[in-house]
Length: 254
Image 1: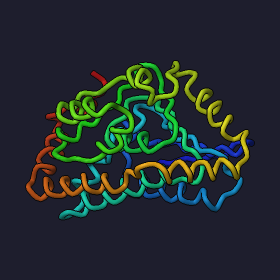
Image 2: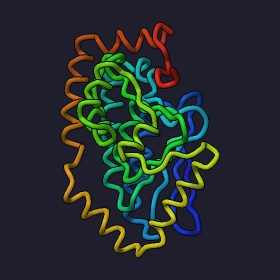
Image 3: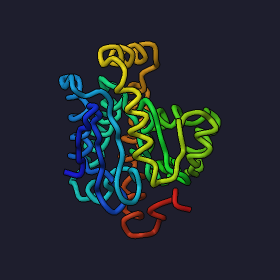
């Protein structure tokens, strides 16, 4: 299990992704994250969630080595289903989710951050969606909750990342702080939420989701193109090139 969890005295559930080298999430752990978040609705003591990572990268996406080792289409099917579940679970979590982005945030990381209620980021963090280079699509829905529409299109076509500082200017990241202050800041924000009436906060989360445009349907629409590209061989070709070291493993680090 690469998802570690702990609960503070205030009832803040901290979830830490820990899968070196770059926190690429395996299928089982992506599903485990969804299960933990779904379970919050039955845990009345939980007042807020802080989702973060340790080491290099907040999340570099899916575990490509795992995908390519699975027979037939099991890898792409498993990854797409797991990601859909995890993003939905963050969005639908019974209490607000604060993402504390410690390092580059790519692919799956964009889906998680874009589904969260609040995003805090360390200085210099880059957010990107390199799906086109990976012969796939998906999570533009969630990127659209972080960047303006025209910039979203450029980021998808070019695979170029954007900085946390730019997201702060756009108002989609609440705070950008030195890395050493990231977790204190995230818990400060979560603590403000935790200090409110738990019943009212849960109702507030449900009410906001009710007046929003839920991202799940459009994300699943995007995934249909990923399936098509995979059947055409585009996905396998790109993933194999990545595993052979023919493509940059971390475009957000440039």
